[in-house]
Each structure stands twice: as structure tokens, then as C-alpha cells.
Length: 422
Image (tube, rainbow, N blue to C red; front, side, top):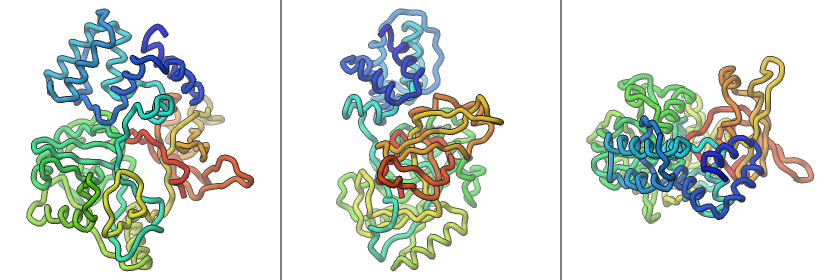
């Protein structure tokens, strides 16, 4: 291997997951390669700088960038000083190494390799950012239970340090929101708290009548996740909270929800609000609530056991009620179109994380998406809507009935497993 950039470009040039894994295995003992993946993909490592200019004309080694990145991650250097330090560091590098540094800072090595693939080669190399996830159905719900609206927003952990607020995506990457939520967080959050909820974007920074449609709202969330959102766009954001994260896993949800609601009794912050909760005493009442949400144009409902504890994994104490099924799958191949779409994107071949469900998704794309999307999608997560899971007689890989593309998931690094699909 002549350089890290050559290695990344070799990975980028193949669309085969197996070939990518073989390329990675050849570098199994290369500590520099492992370090590059850790700094680029570690969800707990944020550098708080996205944009900086540079004119690399030196010959400094790539190893020199990691102490600098550590300073940024520890907030020892911030703001314009952090940007200037990155620029100065990049200028001393060989252009190839400066390009690798840029990709690390962006959190995208542009080689179609996910956190899951890296951990398959180097077990546990990339830590996971864990959130509490709902079960695929309501089989584990014990009545009476809480019923809450299932929104179409971007999942978010909101952390308040007493001065500033940091919004984390489900992948652990930070949403750049230009401090749009900071003032509201100061009104209702205690220092050191993490709230669980969703980011929604509205038509302007005053109305709370209804969020923008899912594609538009989550498109803005994706821009925030990539650090390309403007301050004007960020001002449209709202955070709807439904939990105060209890990392000790000892406080029942009814107490956490009570504490959450209490914060809003005398405070009405502009950009943070609390999810409305209704008690349902049986499945019939839950169904009525669910149908009311669908009639309002919402995605569905979430049921939660009153005494449930927060856990960093999927829990049957939370259950989804949805009109259609959705799955977050990893793109493993691209199929070229034919006829009108010849030379363009025809379909995405997608799989669950364990490879037990595989499907070719050929609908749901705009003409612009078909014309501009290519092999860079491989290794990325997409949301696919479907009507039913198809189990092959005699065993084998399952498929999905009527799969339709919904959106790219820049905020996720892990696909659903087959066990999570209905």
C-alpha cells in the first residue's frame, strides 16, 4: 500500500461488499489504517469544525494530525482558532494526506465502508452510540400504557452541559444547528442531562401548526448532520422530547415523563416541546389512538409501558403501531436502469445487517436522484417502505413485498437485522 488515500480509493472502486472486506483484511495489522477509521467513524469523537480552507504543499506525515484532532475533540481549541489550527495542519501535509484529513473531519472516508463492516474485520474497533429503540410490534405492552404520537422526524439525543447544547444523531454524529436550540435548552434542561426525542423542521421559525413533510424535514436534518445547513434553515428546527435518559436504568418511565412534563409547566421555550401522552387501558383504545394519528397525517403511534426502564437497546417495553412497515437497510450494490433510465440508477440492492433479508428497490426515486446517484451509495443506509416480508419456501434469503425507497439515512450507520423486520 503506497498511501492511505490509495487504500481508500481502492475500497471506493469496488461495489462488492466481499471485495471490500478482503481489502480490509489485507491491512489487518496496519495500525495507521485502524486509526483513520476510528477517528472518522467513532460516534463519540467530534471535532466541531467542518469548513476550513487549505493549500497543502508540505510533506508532514498523517500521524501528525491525530494530536491536533484530539485537541479539537477535547474542546481545548474551539471556534475560529480550531478552524485555523486545522488549516495550518493541513497546509503542512502532502496533498494526499490533506485529503484524508479532510475526509476524517467530515466523518466520511468516501470508500463505502460502514462502521459495521469495520467491526466485522476488527471486532469492537468502532464503539456504538446506543439509544433505546422500540420493538417492531406491541406484543410486550402491558395495560394501562402510555400512547404517544410517532413523528416522522430525525432521532436525536440532546445533551446540555449547562452552557451549550449538543444534538447527537442516532449514529452519534453531531447535528450542526448553529445554536438554534441552546436558548430553549437553558430554559428547561438541567446541566448534564440528555433528552431523547426527534428533530422536526417547520415552514418558518414561528409557526408550530405542522412540521414540513417528512422528505423536506429530514432533508434539512441530513444537511445539519453533514454540517451544510445554513443558520436560516437551522432556525426552523424544533426538538420534541419524550424522555430524560436515565443511564443508570433505575428510574421508571412514569417518573421520567413526569419530570419532563414538569419542566414545561412554567416555561414555553420557542424550539423545544414535550410529546403529548395519553393513557390507553387496552388494545382497542390503543387502536383508536393510532387511527387518530393516521387521520392527522402522522406516521403512527408508540406505546410505552408505564414502569419501563431506559436501556441502551431495543426493548419490548416500547412498541410501534404503523400503517406500513419500514426497514433501514444497507446498500450492497447498484443496478443500472434500462429504457428511460439507461445509464442511470435503476435499483438499489439492499440487505439487513445479517444478510438474511435482501431486496432490489427500484421505485421511489426522483429522476434527479436516478441521474446523480452512483456507487457512492454502497455501504450507506437507506429507509425502505414495504407491505410484507416474503419468506422463501425451503429456506434461503427472505425478500420484501412492494419495496419503495423513502430516504437516505445520513444519521444511521447500522442497518436493521432480520429479527427487527415484520
